[in-house]
Image (cartoon, rainbow, N blue to C red):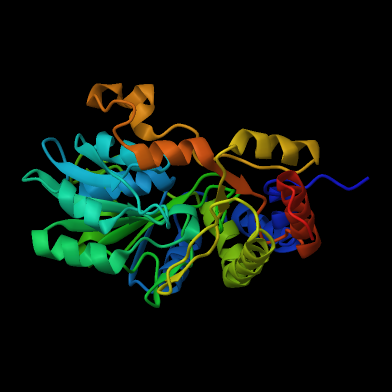
Length: 371
């Protein structure tokens, strides 16, 4: 009997780094320095360089990264921020956290990322920024969004929680806007062994404001310039992330190989397969297919001991948390259709091609597609 294929095997991913991770833990324990310090500074410098930006500020998680960007940039009550209609709710929550209003914009039906044409139509006199998401690891069309933002005097940000290492027109995610927020949640392409996040930016003043806000509003202990929060990248997590960062590009390359195997093997199946524009380099955080009978496909995979997940089953505008916006069902049909049809297949840097072929075989059999 074949072994189960998990959706994502975090244990196997981190087992590859076990010795180095243990050494990093010992280094932090022995240092006696457990908040901020050299480990955090070293990772910030390395991750800034990786993202091709001059500044990185480590924070507690990806949601805080986005919230602190908006807060540091003066986005607040009365302002509108354009956000994708299809995304994890954290993108919207960051906007709400600073008192601004998230305005959903439908995606390009092929890429599932925010549509610049639809974004242009959503701009009002209250619009202050666009918060694009590199959904599923594929960069949004930041070149078109940058032109739109410049034309209307808007700020442009990236929710890069799923886009570690992705490129748009040759440039890294994180370097494509005024500022970007990253998450290091364990399941991300660069995952910690707990929560973590970072803000990267070309803007030194913005980076400094984020750093102050994230540390109780303070540069110097007991000297508080503004009303800040406590959102700092944990010293131990910084050390662990520093251990894993050198492997990120190789891991992403393997994800690309897996994705291409899926694309080739599932081409004859009645599925909407991922579409990557020529200018985009996806890092395949997840491999998402569209299936009108999604639940039946998920059941077939489960029966074969193959994991799958739905990213995301309920769009933010239909969540009780955003009932106050009064956006009715049917108002955002592309996002709602995606929620009903998308299914994420197993993906990760430790997934073998033999396992990928088994997933493909089960799906082809489910649809009655011959060899």
